[in-house]
Length: 269
Image (cartoon, rainbow, N blue to C red; front, side, top):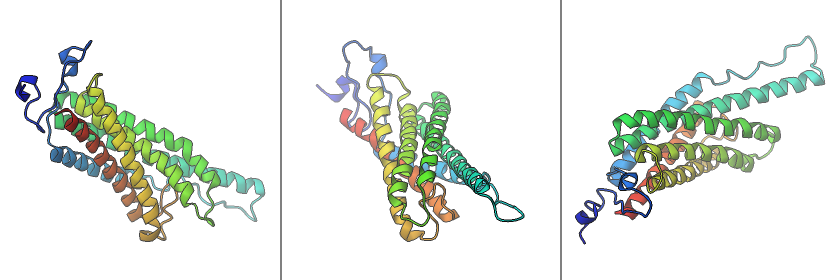
């Protein structure tokens, strides 16, 4: 039987949707036809736009939530010192959560739109773009809000905090990547169950792994490339290191999401 007879189209140019018992042909029609190069290019462009946008947003609130130093007529009391430290930690955690939420929202929006553009869904792309922005902003933001206080509780600037930073920041980055991959998969497949869900699942996994690897690279390489930037902190202290972090997470998450979608298409053609 030829490919045209099975409805698969030319190999590598369209997605095959074989009937499955209990599901209608319409529910299985993913409607995705793309080349691997175009998929990766659009995803990386979306990631680049999101990285720059979230970096600009993060710079606009940098140190806005950090309280000033204690101003007293003498030495501060123990209670004043502890209260100031708690306020400082809360400020750092709040700034980190908002910055990461902006990063996730930007990635969710741009990758969802990129997926819809790749599938030729201009109208539904606006709906999935909004959903991607909400998911991308909420999930990483909540993860950072919950995990950053844990990191700050154990953080000691006089000790090697690399393993703790890799664990906490890596977890937050993977949530960001998973949300971004989910948004890309939803934009590409249009949502729904059946075989459409495979694009969503594979893109989610790819985004999660890509962002996790990006954060590991940033934490390890940051010690060499940015030795004075304190890259183990939730928000590093130099613009160049902060921009690098945004770029790495966004581009690796986008590449991972695209790779996941490409693998599903190759397996079905």
